[in-house]
Amino acid sequence: MFCFQCEQTAFGTGCTERGVCGKQPDCAGLQDLLLGLLKEAAAKGADPALLADGLFTTVTNVNFDPEKVAEAARRVAAAIPRKLPPDMAGLEKLAGKYAFPPRREKLGEEVADSQELLLYGLKGMSAYLHHARRLGRTDAACDAFLVRALSALAKPDTPKDELISLALECGRQNLRAMEILNEGHIARFGKPEPAAVRITPVAGKAILVSGHDLDDLEQLLKQTEGSGVNVYTHGEMLPAHGYPGLKKYRHLVGNYGGAWQNQWREFDAFPGAILMTTNCIQKPRPTYIERIFTTGLVEFPGVVHVKNGDFSTVIEAAKRAPGFPETEPEKNITVGFGHDAVAAAGGAIVDAVKSGKIRHFFLIGGCDGAKPGRNYYTQLAEQIPADCVILTLACGKYRFNKLEFGDIGGIPRLLDVGQCNDAYSAVRIAQLLAGAFQCGINDLPLSIILSWYEQKAVAVLLTLLSLGIRKMKLGPSLPAFVSPGLLRLLVEKFDIAPVSTPEEDLAAALK
Ligand code: FSO
Ligand code: SF4
Image (cartoon, rainbow, N blue to C red; front, side, top):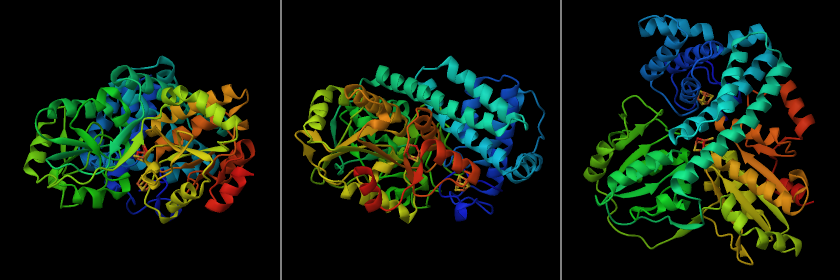
């Protein structure tokens, strides 16, 4: 196998024996086959929903089940149409034809790596299109672009420059994908508003919901209403508490734990059932494999998968588990600072900047991971001076969102904008500030310092680049699929740089 699509890739170069994420070679091979078929299907004008779901299936930490990936490959093959070998051994042999290293050898490093940059951006965008579609939102231009860009990847002779411009176009289209997802969330659950979220447990039976799919959360909340089972958010579900249509459920009692990479410890300790709605599942420990469930595209061999939104097995498992024995003293954090909430405070924020009370904004967001270097983000947030405001989003926020930051004249110093897809909201906030100060985003007293882990972060980064945003810092390390030539281009055109030390990066930002 060969895979280097995420930040934790082995030795910073590529996973070859097995994935650091736990992906096994059989599953990796079948994902290569699925991707190859998706490109061929796109060239034949296949259904964009089928393409998006296929791509999302191959995102890091989504689907570890070879049988299910093979099923997905068969669905895509049927759309081409193309006959596949009937057995797994035949599929795995065929998969070898689509592996990355021979392709890289044939195409040369720069073209092959530019193909991967575009492919990973498309994977990230597909995740957002998938969630939006589940809320009844689609966009014809995004769908058409997905088909066109994947078709370009089916052709070996698409030149590097065209691939790079498609990658930037992917960033533009991804902004729209995040926008329709935002519209879908607001239409269904109302505009996010600042809300205190309890982070200590309440006595009683419990279900922990992780991942990004707010629709799944809503179904679960409806099905647990009046059952005596409390629901807690985990990881990227935390922003759910800001939506009026979700926080109205009184048994959505709080948030438990932190980011996805701590799940072994946290799920072990959680005395109830656990539901994974999207990516970021790790190989479950035997201690909780009986009480963890998947739904949607996320699957793991040996874990019960819930289909058709019927969460009764999850609720039964929660009732069998002991639950929390007692209510701990209440502690809260605040979420819900989407662009509408920030716009409402816009006048006060602009006044605070003009009077010098707010000196600088830091957007510190992105995806968390397990590497020790990620302490950087905690140290950075801690060292940011008291006259600066921190905007944050995605699961990287757990590195600092339980610290006390206080406020500047009533404006909280830490504003949680939401999930990774709410990068859309962060862009709107930046545009709002730029409008108020009649300048461009690059001229604002704003520094963007991102952490990346998987392919949705690649899509978001491409979005920010496509908006012409310069001088972003990226960490904890640069992607392995960025070849030296591609890196030169990113540095020359966008002044993008890896994170350094918190002290150096802070000094540079506040200069
Ligand atoms: Fe984090 Fe996981 Fe939202 Fe990612 S939970 S790592 S890019 O899936 O998605 O922020
Ligand atoms: Fe390795 Fe990341 Fe690929 Fe998993 S997704 S196999 S950790 S590069």
